[in-house]
Image 1 (cartoon, rainbow, N blue to C red):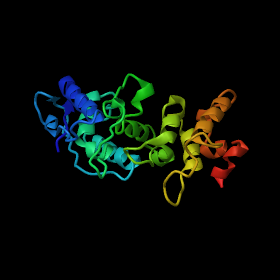
Image 2 (cartoon, helix red, strand yellow):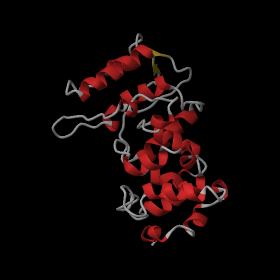
Image 3 (cartoon, helix red, strand yellow):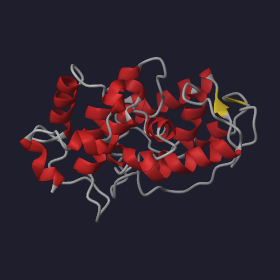
Image 4 (cartoon, helix red, strand yellow):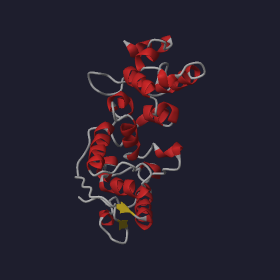
Length: 238
């Protein structure tokens, strides 16, 4: 389908529908907005996407990055209308209905991006993983700890690490997080990666803050950081 962007009216209608769903209202997505001239505006380039599902955040980010690059579209992080259009188009993937037909969209920031608010921008279910993928596009697998989750359920590891710009942009730290928390057999997070237990991502941010006082973390590799981690992280490094 040809991609356009939602204009302010379209975004308002989409946001209003999400609030209706959260209140227990109709769950049928307003897909007519995707092609409504009164709710959209041209993107300026020829971009096509296909209706599909994604195995995880990495697959979604990789797909969008490939499509954007092929279309010559690179500066999209702040394009609120584009991300709103994509969120609506892929709403079945980012907010699948339960067996009983119930959708739980959660906070509006998960579907309508807030590019000027870093505290919430990373929560967008499509723009968030895309931004991480693109920032590490020369080796996106090092950021897999933030991209291996289901698209609709980022979870605590993403919440703890992606919310900190000094962490999410640092190649060594993300390589460390992936080394610590991703099971290389299942390609999923290890048990205990989230939450408040010892060695969790929450604890990792505390340790990184301490390291940052004395070390140049942008000059450190994931293996170098792993070698100096406190004993509480040893169970994740086995």
